[in-house]
Length: 211
Ligand SMILES: N[C@@H](CCC(=O)N[C@@H](CS)C(=O)NCC(=O)O)C(=O)O
Image (tube, rainbow, N blue to C red):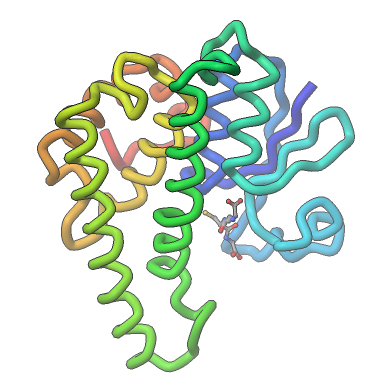
């Protein structure tokens, strides 16, 4: 039995969608980020960083979105969210998840939480502008990849890496240039949003803002 500590649309979303895809029994626990519940001492014992998501596997807490995603995919091989162990796609799968976790997700962290770096409004403005350019350059790279090697990150093989990408694309919806303004990314979003697991995770998390 899994327990996912989540907040609607936050980094927990792709792990939630993965749990739906693998059809595993799980329980959701809401963490109200606005109310600061992520800093409650009881929650910090599970996730010392004070962020969502946290996944309890039995009673053992696991943190870091990419780790949750890879763990759920690997524990449920029949759902085929992870390519076969020794396949070439398995290596690409690690590469894409680590790329998204190392390069794109931290850029979004700076975009949404510039106060992590500075309390000064002018510093935050410069940081956000630079971060916006960084995120857009990543969309350009992924768009070019999908254009020639799509339709998914691993060509014909849908995987957990796609769950992470579509979540991160959704985060750009209110940015000056959302990810869907890139042609291949737009088509990719249409494809990904048609998945029953996407519709279900949005319904369960009450998300109606990226139809
Ligand atoms: N590296 C962490 C980052 C998680 C993260 O930044 N989560 C955000 C929501 S998307 C959060 O909990 N923010 C609340 C806060 O920082 O107070 C992960 O991948 O799990």
